[in-house]
Every structure is written in structure tokens, then in C-alpha cells.
Length: 619
Image (cartoon, rainbow, N blue to C red; front, side, top):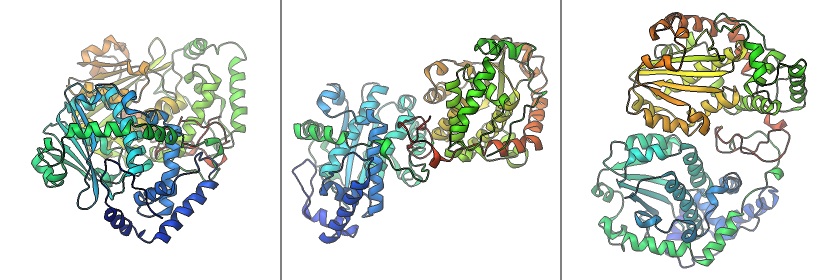
């Protein structure tokens, strides 16, 4: 089986192809033909994969990116087709000349270098300079990357890729604030899992002190192995130790033609009619998820019986008219209306084969309806969402005695819902963090701690929503930005808002740190615009009474409530009590069996969960 080597900008001598085939034990024609045939036969059996006629050349190149593994090649094909269904916006660009702003590459470079390295790796050079980075600029970068990846998949043959980011003339602090980590994670999945990009190294040329922040953010969305392949070069001299000068463009001290000439050539190539038609064809190589075979639940496309008890709590005081007036706000005060809504939910739960817990009591469903503003349909979705998340991201739901198993986090953080509601029936939750040194493992401990409190609130409270107050005066926010996993942060926020139905009236952060705006920009990526606009910075605790009634604050904050030490001790006693620990054991098992989920229209509602993307439908 001969490989098509149609003329392209990527130099590909015949001996290169043979060397790479030999590396992956595919040098024998009959072995390659057998592997390709297996893939073709497999494709015919995949009802959900729409395109069946992938060429032999294409399938061989998939095998090469999978190191000769047929099973990995199957997974890669399925993944890329699925991603095209899930994330069509990334694949919307077909003609780079008409789909990109005319001046896009005036101050940027994005070029695969014509010559391979001696060990047969392709170098891809990217440079940003001049104009300010915007979200639109980054989005076009993602889309152009997909077009170039399709081109390289069609024309290239290599061991892997070395990426060079020339950030000498870009404000990395600005880039960090503009980078949407959700889109970044999706983009990385497309390149690495969909196109099979095998990254030998990622070279970053910069002297900026912000490079560590940027790299730490990116490392959260790549594997540990790839994360270790980031190398920072302070100058071109360091780059020459990794990449031979002779294959670099003139501007980089090399012997290759100028970078701008190479950019013009690749733009011309990618906008040729034959490639535009190819892009249009490949953009349709997606999936019909209604035809995907049901099977064992698979997290790659995502990220018990018991009873609720209606317990009263001295920690969470309700106003005398709380229930009556909160129900009135959501039109649930009329006789029989609330009971009718609860019965509808109970009847719906019995029909959901994938939801394992069936005996949700009326009190829990009442509170779920309130969190859903009285909407039965939203309440269904919230129940399904929380149960599904317990299946998808179980690490958040480990039954933990915070006192015994997380003593470290208790020295650093206090999470205290305040006893008295506001006059508008909002519950204020005060979080005080006292540490200058942050370790990555602290965050998951904190998340688990918060979820134990969230379960307690869901069982005992009745509120119109929440006001969050974060006292970060003693916290090194720049350290938080470099250490926190934005993937886990996104999952945690999704759990609180979509799973537990936390409706946030306001988020107030007490801090004088200059890094606060950067942190807020990161957090806003995981919130709706409406909630994002409710984040406010207070420069001192003296400003808090302007947004939280002074009387309900602890004495340390100028209020009339107990001290934070007393409140913390009472809360720890409550969430580590035998009664609450038994409650957690029951509730953390209120999850799903995804093999029983009714097939239906494919949806992206669980895109933020672990792995990449999921084949789920929510009834």
C-alpha cells in the first residue's frame, strides 16, 4: 500500500516515511494493509460514525500517531468525530483567507517549518506581538490550529511535534486574564486526543515573570507527561540547543526562508480550493449520537436507597415567616400547588431508570423546587445533575470526617454559614482563609469540606439564596492562581450551582491584593455573566456592613454574632457528628447507573466533567 505524498509545503522524503514506519513496526506492506483493513471494517460497524470512507492514507497516518496500535486508532477516530459533534464551533473555519480577519497575521506567526528535525519531528512556530490579545484573537487561534491540524493529518508523516511559542513581545499577564480555560481544555482535547498530536516538547521563549502562571494554568488541562515537556527559553540561544538553526526562519537566525514568507505560503496553501473542499468534507465527519451503541458507562465523554431526614438545626435559624414568604416569591404558596409539584417530581424519579435513589422525601424536593425558582422542569434537571456528578466525579464525594481526616485544611480555612438570615431571607456564608503558603492538595480538601457543609445546608436550611463573603486578607492570591486546578475549580462551581442549586445573590471578596482581578477573571469563566457581575471586591472589613447587615456578622467583623472561633467549632461539631456522617454515606451514593439512562437527543450538559465528553441525555 503506497502512501500519497502529494506536493505540499512540508518536506517529506521517502526515506523519512520508511524510517517512521519501521519505528512503529509498520514497515511491512502486508502489516499496514491488515491494520488499515481492520479499521475500515470496524468503521462500517460504528452506526454513530457518519463518515465511512476514510482513505487508506488517512488511516495509516492515524496508526502512526497511535504508535501502530489499532485499538488506539479506533479510539482516536471515534474521539475526533465525536468532538466535531460536540464542539462544532472549533471546526467552523474552512477557508482561512475569508474566515480570518484580513490583518490577523500582521503581528502573528503560525507556521509549520518545512524541514523535519534529525529525529523526524515537525517544528511548529507561533508568535504573538504588537496588538493586545483579545478573546477573539485566541478563538481564531484555536480555529486556525484545527485547519492546520487537518492539513498536517492529510500531508505530514512524522514522529511528533515540537511547538515553539515566541512570547517575547506579548504581555503574558494580559494573556492569562483573557485565556478561557474551558475552551483551552476543549482545544487541547481536540489536538491531543482527536488529531493525535504527539508533543515532544513545548518551547516558550520569554523573559516575563508571568510565564510560570501561564504554564501552571495550561498544565492543568494536559497530561502530567506533557506538562513536564514545557521548557522556558530566555533567548534564542537556548532554542538552538533544541532545534537546529538551519531549519529555523531567517528572523530566528536560521537558514530557512523568512517567517513571513512561510506564513504567506501556508495561508495560500490552506485557502486553495482543494483544501477548502477537504475541510468542508472533514467537518462533516462527525457522529449521530442517537445511534451510538449503549454499553458500560464511559467517562471518556463526560466531568442508593436511603432516606432524607428533615432535621432542625440551631446553626441555621429561619425567620418566622421564611417558608411562607419564600414560597410566595416562587408561586408555591397556594394550597395544593407545592404538593402537586412534589408528586410530579416523585413520579418522574420513579421513571428514571438511571437514577438509583428513588425515595427522595418531600422536604428535600420542596427545597429543590425553591432552588429552582418553583420550576418543576428545572428541579428535575437539578436532581439529575447532582446524581450524575456523583457518578462522574466521585473524588469530590468521599465520606470524610473533616476533623479527623482533614486537620490541615482546618488550620487554613473556616467555612461558616452565619446563623441569622437577612431580611430578604438570604443565608450569608463566611469563608476565612489564613495562609500565605498554598499547596495544590489544599484545594481538593477545601472542596470536600465545602460539600459536606453544602449537604448539611440542603438538609437543614430554607433560604432564598446565598451571599458569599471570602475574607482573603491573609491569602496570597498570586499563589492561589499558580496552584489551583482550574479544571477542579470548574467542577466544584458546577457542583454548587447546578448540582446543589446554590443561587448566589452576591460574592464579596475582602482583599487588597493586586492579583484579585486576575483571580476574578479566571473564576468568571465558570459562571454565567449574571453571576459573574455579582462578584465585588471589598478593600477592608469596614466595607462589609454596606453589603451584609452588620448585626448578623461575627464580632470580629463589627457584628453582634458569636466569634468566628465559636462558630467554627459549632459547625465542625455538626458536620462531623455521627448523624451527619451517616447522612453523607446515604447521599453520596445517590448517584446514577449510566448504562440505564434512556437514549435520547445528544446533549452537552455534562461537558465540564472529567475526561473529555460524554454520550448522555437528560430526560
